[in-house]
Image (cartoon, rainbow over all chains, first blue to last red; front, side, top):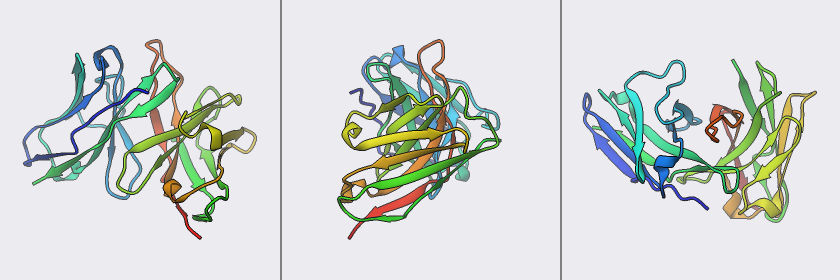
Length: 108
Length: 122
């Protein structure tokens, strides 16, 4: 089945930019979606279809991808952005969603 | 605003069947898929399977032999049964809404329940 690989952790200072990568074979040909999961809470969709944001999600969250890597970028990082982030694609081979391994973003 | 709420036993004995129900409020079940996702302690998200409002299902190949998902639109509920559980099935279980597959052949989960912790232990 399709595998999505993310770095286990990313550390960023407040006000700086965090970049979270999601690697997968030819992921550039797939639409990528991103979820934020704060401690003890359910995941929340922050980016869908590569770079669209649901209502209520700040413009500071943006997505991009090319080749074998998709990236979620968080600009002007705030302490409240600290969370685990997961990428997700749709595996058409099995008609099933696949999640990435997850990245913990720490704001120091 | 669509809301989902999981319910079911928080403790299941090994070899028994885990049963959970998700109740949907604030919107119709029609024309959407409804899924179950789990997260073992400290681990990533894993989709167990999903069901269309009309009843067609798709299960994670790694769990397919043990999973049954059903839907009752009159009660606005869908359910998960996972048989022959072991300690490896201990996890937070979430239900979520999955949008119809779009023109580019993809979809995502837009609403999630709060999750319910299920522990497998004797």
